[in-house]
Image 1 (cartoon, helix red, strand yellow):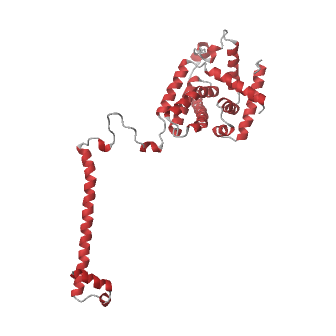
Image 2 (cartoon, rainbow over the protein chains, first blue to last red):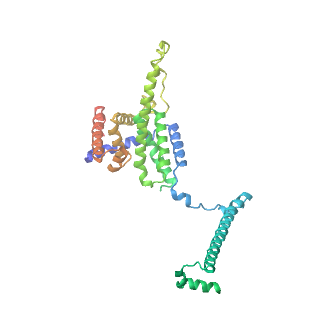
Image 3 (tube, chains in turn blue, green):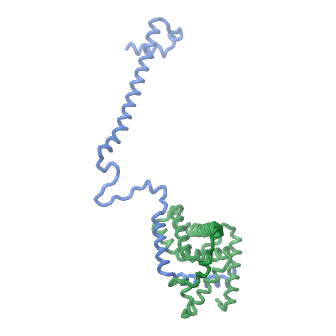
Length: 133
Length: 189
């Protein structure tokens, strides 16, 4: 585009700008209202939800800074209790499994049912020595 | 990411021009206001997390799409209206009604300001507005985005959904068309 054409285009631009200064007050109010509505609906970024807002003066925020209701306390205690019970249950189960296996070996030794290869196995002999102790 | 203030400042800067863009296209003030509001809301809701520098071409694209949607709705509406109007009975009671007899220009609008006591400059401004509105839609879009919104060629191409070459062609044709139209009306810039 030539300089003359560019100059013409910018003359038109200035004329259009002047015309926008003459919009009615009703139109300007409607546009301002639309702008406020739009800003209120602004999309928040993903990081927004992980940034803690600064605490207001005299007020503490956060889940554990607020006094918990009975329901809140139950909501915290219940999963902890369930986890503890699960852990105890698993431990008991493993202990019982271990005892069961040991009992099976004892029965096999006493009834002379062990395979011959067990007697030449150094690991098995060490296991027997450990049990005696 | 644009802050709330940056978004608000951008919209405040662009809202008047956006309204003019819309009214050039649809020629109805209420519809133009609705289009601008829809475009602003869409920009904020869908692209409010974009950097401030990306907002201008995005908004122009949204605005142009909103204008296109308006025309599509109007086309559907006029189809239904003409369909049902053909089912109406005797309309002779309404034949004497002429909208222009009761139409009065809103205070501060273009029509009210075209009255006899307007200054020469205001007349020239009004003629320029008129001739811009008469431009073919694509030429007007390209011209306004390049020279009024001050988008570069690439940004204008994205907003219009066309190639950069097309943008330059539309701009050049718009400039020549406007210059010829204003010259025919005795205005030389």
